[in-house]
Image (cartoon, rainbow, N blue to C red; front, side, top):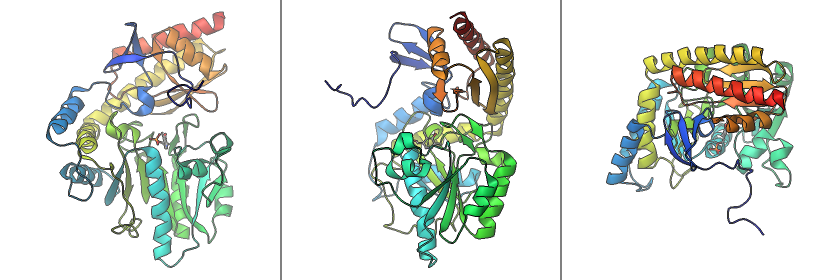
Length: 391
Ligand SMILES: *Cc1c(COP(=O)(O)O)cnc(C)c1O
C-alpha cells in the first residue's frame, strides 16, 4: 500500500525535532552536528535568533497580499541584491527550480524581442542540476531525472563538463544562452575553474549570447564570496539563486542585468507567492549578515580550517577517502567506498553529511559553524571512517 507521503524520497530513519545553530536534535535526544544544513539552505544555522526575529515580526504584521500591490520587503531585498551584485533587477521565486524556469524564459524572450525567435537553445553540462520542474530536468538532461517524463522541454544542448572545445563548436545561430553552476553541487562538488568561467564569458560576448549562472547551491556566501562567480572576476547576465538566501524559509530569486531582462515586461511572468513579505523579510536579514565583508572573511578563515582538517582526515584514511575538493564551506570528500556508507557511518557517529554524484560526500555546514564545531565534526568523521575500515 502506498504511503500517505508520496514515496519519492529514500529517507534516513532520523527525525529531527529541534535545531540550534550547527546542531540538530533527534526525537530520541541525540545531538547531531549538521554539516548538511538542509543541503546548503540553513546558511546561518538553525533557529538563528536574528532570522527568527525577522520572521516572527513580519508574521505578526502581514503574511501575504499579492503581487497586485507593492511589497516593501520585496523592494528592500531587491535593492540590497542590486547594491551588492552585478544585477540591475530581481524577480523573486520560492525555489531553485522556479528560478530555472524564469532564467530560461528570460533568455528566450530576450532574443525573441530582438527579432531572433529561433534563437532558443541553451547549452548545459553533464553532472549539472537545475531542479525538478520540466525546464530543470530538461536542462540537466540526465536519464535518472528525465526517464519516463517525456516529452521533455526542447531546446537544451548537453555537453561534457569542462569541455571548452565542444562548447566552442556547439554555439551556433540557434544558441541563446549557456547555463552553468560555478560549483556543481549535486554533481559532486565540482568547481568550474576560474579560467573556464572567464573563457565562457568571452565566448558569450563574442557570440552575443547570454551567460546564466546557477548559484542556487554555491551562492549566498557559501564559497566565501557573496556569490561564487565573484572569485573569477566575471559577471553573468542572469543568475539563479535560492537555497541559502532564505536561510531555511522557501525563497528564490533570478538576478539579471537590465539588458538581459529587457523582454520581461508587465504580464510576461508572475508568481502568487514569489516575493511574499515573510520570505523577503527573512531574505533581507540573511543578506544583511552575509554581505558583510567581515562575515565573509570569517567564512574564508573557517573554510581554510575545515579544509586543512579534512586533508588530514583523507591522509589518515586512504582506504576510505581519495581527496578533498570544493570551495569555501562547499566541500566534497571524494570516496573510495560508497558515499552512502560514509554518510550512514556519519549518522552512527552523530554527524550529518550529504551524498552527491561522482562518489562524493558533501560538507555544507552552516556558515556560522564555530572552530570548535569544525574540530568536533572532523573528530566524528574520523570515527565514522575508522568504523568503515573495521568492517
Ligand atoms: C537545489 C538546486 C536547484 C533546485 O532547487 P529547488 O529549490 O530544489 O527547486 C537548482 N540548482 C541547483 C544548483 C541546486 O543545487
